[in-house]
Length: 266
Image 1 (tube, helix red, strand yellow):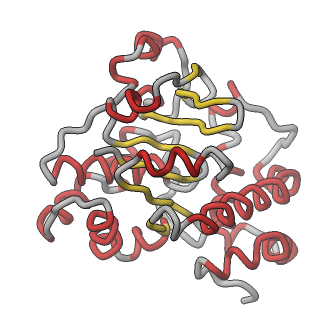
Image 2: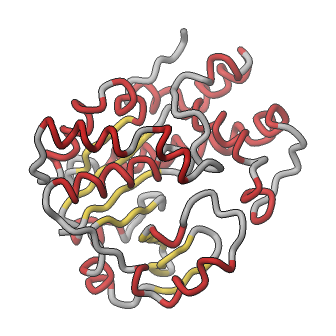
């Protein structure tokens, strides 16, 4: 059985990937990984400043020109045998926007869920991450400060979130995609993660959920990935974004935000 985790970057994807792996173990499933047996693994120490071990995740890009096994922006190759790729893993992640190929690919996974985060917090997270060593080495922005980053990239990042969310919601019922809000994991871990476990067919009890919560606490994960996990809270946008920026966010993505229960107009 292989789960597909859909999410955009800076949405808590690594945190939730860690949770699902822990749930699989608690349910008696030994996690498998395609990338573990791949030649890419031999290169993991050749790339400095990784905010966490990118070579530990099976990341799949689904595009009109092909399927790709990715190690973030560092390495990529075509996936020629999707069935073998899926069989070699218990948890695959993808941030690709929904496109024509998804109708064929999504049913190949035993379970599917979509992790979503308040786009205003995602925006703030990006403005900080853009000045971390990894992004400064492999990415680029003309911004000279987080505040300038927000001004320059707000429209693009909010539009990206809106389009990604809208695409997933359009096929949610057809492909039985369980939507999980990052904020709900923080406010009600056992209820939210328990619901995700049930959707994925993982038999875990209350004690298991408490053990998982302890194993993936922000304090513990921040020791593993200090350059990736920054705050572990929600709602920071209210302290960082200006009134005009909040208005711009709502103008771009207000409808999608409402559909997912994110407050608009307050």
